[in-house]
Length: 408
Image (cartoon, one colour):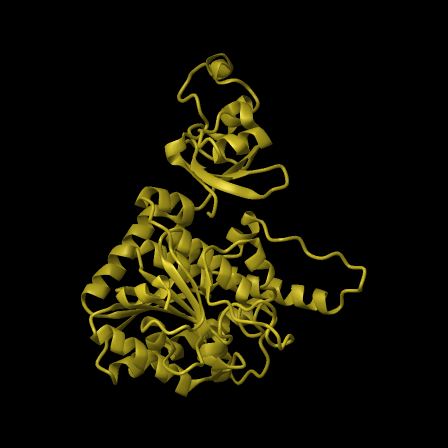
């Protein structure tokens, strides 16, 4: 047993995310036996003194079942309606199932904006922490009735599948996802669970899905595919092994790997495992070699985690190769001379992305000047700030202590 596996036994605060194909059969019919087994596992953890937060997909599928729909609606409005109908039924299942085992639940519906705004994110953390102190299991989901990102992401995934299915042999392969597209793709419960785990300083994030972990190839099409037991980091090679989304949900292995990269880079270990396997959570916490484990690194200060994970960016500074090397290798501040373009409108103190000329995101930071001033200073020496603006704040557009580079 590896040291990382042994350490899972000590995980105290655990976020468990159940995917659509764990909660339902084929994205529609409730998988009651499977759900009850997982609820029993989480209830045992709670009764043993561990803190458990549940993030559950499946509201749209539940709504479809209640409304008698056989196929997932293509209309965004209809999917929002299904989510509105299904969320109450889904929560009722969890409330009754946990209550039978002596555990109280609380429903918490979120939007991405709740985690992007610092004040709202702190209020959310406070609420969740009080619930955990009271022995309650919070049940979270993105509020699809008012937040369309997850449902729009489903459209994007299905369109990509259709294009891939009809692609000719001469079609170009899709480029590897940039950090910008990775961040934009966090409109699903994988990303939501990762952000919640980071916000709560969780020890472990368990992403349960309909496959047993990350494989060397697609196990459905390649019988020689081998499950990867552990990953030190989520790199481009790992991401290349994952493609496509699930038929009834918005995620897929790529979504889970991106969520795992975000959470593990902020100190939370992540396990991707099969939700249909018996007693999967207990077996994982017991050190058994199940799923794919991504170890967490040392946690960064809360302010830096907010910049990296929670805060919504308001624009971007496009920098040259020399600036990227200085920011990455020399851990320098971002000076005006390294900036070649400014994207968006923002104010002093807002979070902006650091991008290269191709649009790839390399970091985020709190900017010292508003966007108009940054445009005027782009490509100029710091000594010229007074002459250009008529005033001087900082020599750098982003100082090093307000800058996060790498996995953001």
